[in-house]
Length: 277
Image (cartoon, rainbow, N blue to C red):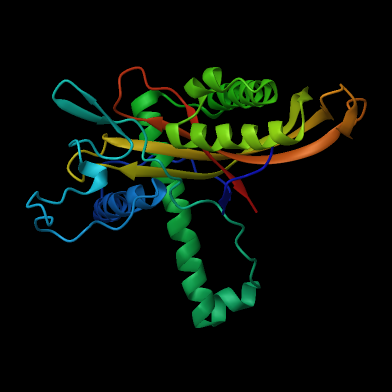
C-alpha cells in the first residue's frame, strides 16, 4: 500500500500582508504551469493541426471536444475545476552543501537563493490557507491522519467506491489500478495500523493559482511525511499466508500530498498524490 506514484524542509508559517510583485509573478508562473501540466497529467496527445478534416469537418482537440477541460466538471453553463490533476513541484530531498560553499562560491549563492524561494513559497501557501480557512497545523494533522488511516483500510479491503471521496479523480484511477494488480497476485490482505503515528511532519506547501487577478481562486497542496508502525499479511485463494506476518510490527514511511480548493463551497482535503524518494 506504500507503492508510490511520483518521484519527487521545514514549513515557515509566518503571515504576509497584501500581494507583492513577487506573489504576482508566482501566480502567473503557476497559471502557465497549470495549463501545461494539466494536459501532461491526463495523458492527452498533442493537439492536431488546425483546419478541416478530409471530410470537411473542423478538427477539435480531445481535451475540449465538449467544451469542458480535462479535470473539470460542467454544471449548467459553468465549468468548475475540481482538481488540477497533478502534484505541483513534487517534494525531493535537497542535497546538503558545506557552509563555506554557500558563502564563497557562485553555485553556493545560487543554491541559497533557490532555498529561500522554496521556503517563501511554503510560507505564502500556508499564509493564504490560514487566511481563507483558519488553518491550524494540529487540526490539519488530525484530519490528514484520519484520511491516511481510512485510505489504507479501504485499499486493503479493495473498496474502490468508498475511496472516491478521499481521493482526487487522477489519484483514484491510480489506486484502482494498484488494487487490480494486487488482487491478481493475492486473494486478500490484512493491514493494521498501530496508533498513534510515530511522527507526522510537513515537507512542502504549494499554491496553484487559476486566475492571476483573483488570488483566492486557487488550490493548496500540502505534502506530509507519515512514519507509522503497521502489521501486514497477504493470503492466496486457499487462505494461506504468502507474504508478511501480522504478528510483527513494521516501520513504514509514506509521503502523501493532500489537496484542497480555496474557492469551492464545502471544499475538503483529499489525497492527490504520493511521493517516493
